[in-house]
Length: 201
Image (cartoon, rainbow, N blue to C red; front, side, top):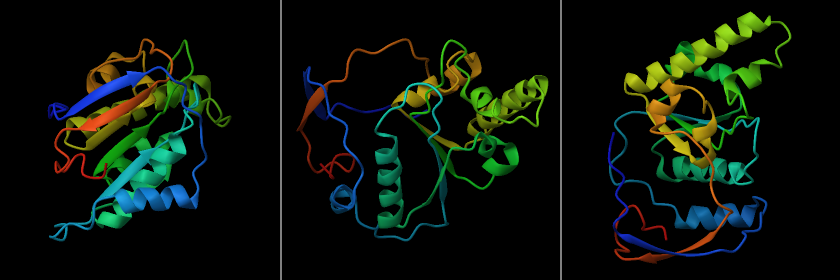
């Protein structure tokens, strides 16, 4: 796992509630203007990313915003294609073979079970409870195997709660969720504005 380097940012926090806002064309255009340009060299091969945004627990209002940012980054850079889904069956071994990376977008599960895959399968009345549980365990195992074998994984904020009571999932994402304080506004001071990771800001 690559270490996350945040040394070039200093953050000041002020405790203010952030108001939700809808995704609209003006906002998408603003994101597109800030997004990196197409790379100098063409990608060696086509890349495809699966963006999974189902929630059965807490709904983060930024889910559609993250979806749009990923679409803009893929389209503008030409580096990857984005497929949005809320279908847990996309985590099957066969399905995952077509993706280079998976992004889990705030996929919060409902407590106390904290098993989003099983939550989603509960709606499938064609399966018995035993079959749902077996399929849920298999889909989780397929996702973990995909990452173990080199598939890319990004987990956005509440996505860590997806399978929160699964030790294997928690080990894969590097932790599990307990709680967090109220939403806060942060102010970012760019120490190295030319750094590729913060150029858009």
